[in-house]
Length: 169
Ligand code: COA
Picture (cartoon, rainbow, N blue to C red):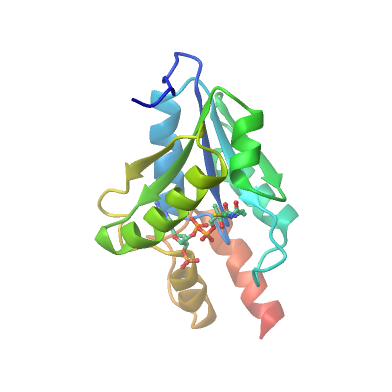
């Protein structure tokens, strides 16, 4: 049996690229905030990814979308996610699954994270209708082609995407 216990004060740490945050991510954060005493949204600051938005821009957008929820905090990080989670113990690493297609990738990530840090538990929250068809790359594709993003991202993100698309054109 695992030695990890979910304690009443266990934090949910929800890492991701959030390039940009979508209505799907927002729904997960809101639901996590009802289950856990504290939710930390962790914006990856990775040099290996070609992000549209800088780390600071992604953090600011996440803060504008979920920063008003009183038990939600937003931070960025460099390095291994499990190291961050371990240093914030008691905490669990949360990932979301939009469907079976996400599972293989998430299982590889969770298995690797367990080898790196056996004490860190990964738990999954299922995305729900109507958010299961949303992905940040799709949102950027729609934005580049001038489509409506109302059903995909909050208005503040739609505005940021419009400006970013224009500056990248
Ligand atoms: N709603 C909408 N979209 C969702 C979603 C949801 N509920 N859940 C996931 N997604 C989408 C994202 O929008 C993104 O879409 P895209 O591929 O079209 O851009 C996709 O799922 C995956 O994004 P994300 O969750 O941000 O994962 P990622 O693979 O970009 O990054 C990290 C994952 C940052 C958590 C991971 O790489 C990491 O931990 N990096 C730090 C270094 C580390 O520890 N690596 C692991 C070593 S084993």
